[in-house]
Image (cartoon, rainbow, N blue to C red; front, side):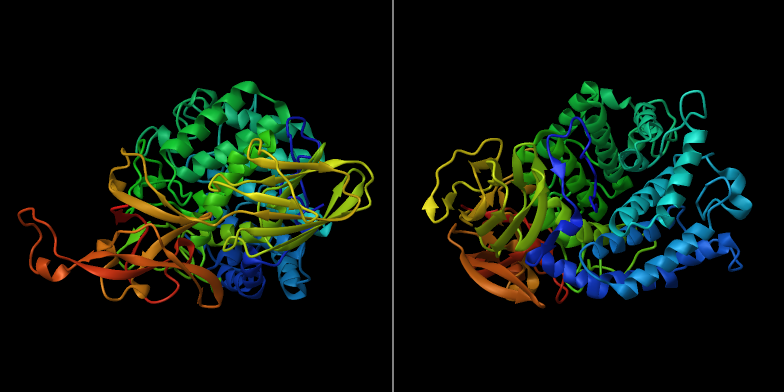
Length: 622
C-alpha cells in the first residue's frame, strides 16, 4: 500500500497512516497536484537531463565518457526525490509517459551501482578512494536516505522492486560499514535515519532500525562534523541528541534529525528520545518559528538563530526546512494524536511551504523572505537544487496526510475537497469532503460504510478558530473539543453527513516583544492563511510604509493567474516619501502621511506577477 510512512505495526504510534492512493484531492491542493502532473514533473525531468544530473549516472556506468558534471556531492538526490514524486503521483493518476521516463531513470541508477552495493556518482572514478572519508560534507548517507525513500515509495505504489533492491543493497553495504564494532561515523546531513526506519518497516529486518538508532546516538562526538567553520553546532553534533536543549544549527539538518528520532521513538518507545523531541518542539514553535511556519532565520549557514531572532527581510526560511517542519509535526501527530501538531502542519502548508513553488509549477524559491524590496523572484532551477524536487514529492504525497485511523476511529486532520476509501474495522469506509477550504470554513463531510459497529470520527478544530458549529444529519450537534479534535461517536452504517463550520475571521497577530523586527506591527491572518501587501495591488504608495488603522477588512474573491483567492481590503495611512527625498536621517518629527486604500493577498501567492515590494508584518494602530 502506498503509505508515505507505514506505522501499521509501530507499537508506539497512536495513529495509523493511510495510503496516498486511497485519497483523491480535488480542491485547493488538487490544483497544485494538477499542475504537478501537467507541468512540474516533466519540467524537472528536463532539468535533470540538461544540468547533467542523469549524465552523472551514465558516466559511472560507462554509458558515457567524461567526469562529474555538476557541483555538489548530493546532486544524486535530485534524481531520487523526483523519482519519489513520480511514484506517489502514479498512486493517484495514470501517467504512462512519466511512468516510462521513471523506468528509464531507474535503469540508469541501477546501472551505476557498484558490485558492493555502493551508489554515488560524486565519489566514483578517481574519487572512489575518498568514500566514507568525509561524512561531514560528502553527503553519502544523505544520498542513501533519499534513494531508500524513493525505492520504498516506488515499490509500495507500483509493486516493482528494481529501485527498491538497488536501495536495499546500498543499505546493506552501509550496515556492513557502520555500527558498533565497525567504522564509527554519523551523517553530516541527517536524512538516512528516517529512511532506514522506513526500510525496517518495509522489510522487518531489524538491522536497519539498529543502524538508525546508532546514527542518532552517535551524534555529539564529532563524528558528523568538522571542528571549525561552521563547527559542530551547525551539524547538530555538539551534544548527544538526548542532551539537546534547543533547536539549533542548520535548519534542515536539525528538523530531519528530529524526523528520524521521532521515527525511532515510534518503533522503540525510547523515553529519553521522546523527552528531547518535545523539548525541541517547544523551543522551536515558541521561540524560533516564523508566523508562516518557516524555519531557519539566518542566511549564514542556513541556520536557526538565537531565541526570537526572526528577521523579515533577510529571513532564510528555506523551502526544504518548511517541508521538514511539516514532516516532523506529522510524525509527532502519529505519536500523540494531538491536534497542536496538525495545527503547525496547516500553518506551514498554506504559508511558508507553498510559497516555495510558483503557481505555474515551474519556478521555485530556495529561501522565503517575509519582506522584500522587489528583486526576489522564484528561479527555474538552482545549482543546489534540493528544494524543487522536494516540493514535487511533497505535493505528490499530500493525499496521504489528510486522514489517519486508530483503534477507535478515523481522524480528519486537513480539509480539502476530496474523496477517500479507507480501510477500517475490516471493511472500507468512504469519505467525501465538499469544501472551498482554506478560503471558506464550511466543510461538508459524507460518510458511507457497511460497518455495523460504532466508531468515532475525529474532526480537527484549528487553533485559530475561536468558535465552530457542527451538524450531524442536519441536526445541531454539540461537542467539546479534546486535544484539538471534535469526536463524533455513533454507528455510521449507511450514509451520514456532517457539516462543520469554522468562521473565517480576520485576525491581527502580534509577535513576542523580543522579536524586535515586529514591534508595533501585526501580521494579518484569515483562517489558516497569512497575508501580505504586494506592490502590484497597491501602486499609489510604498507598501513598506503602510499603517493599518482599522480591524474591519473587506473580503473579495479574486484570482492570481488561474488560482482562486480571497483578497483583503481596507483603509490605512502611508508615508509620503517625497519628504524624504535626498535624506537618510532627520530630526524626529511626525511623518507626513496620507489616507490610502490597501489590498492584501495570501503570502504563499506573492511574486507570481510583476516585480514589486512585499511585506507581511505591517505597522498598526489597532
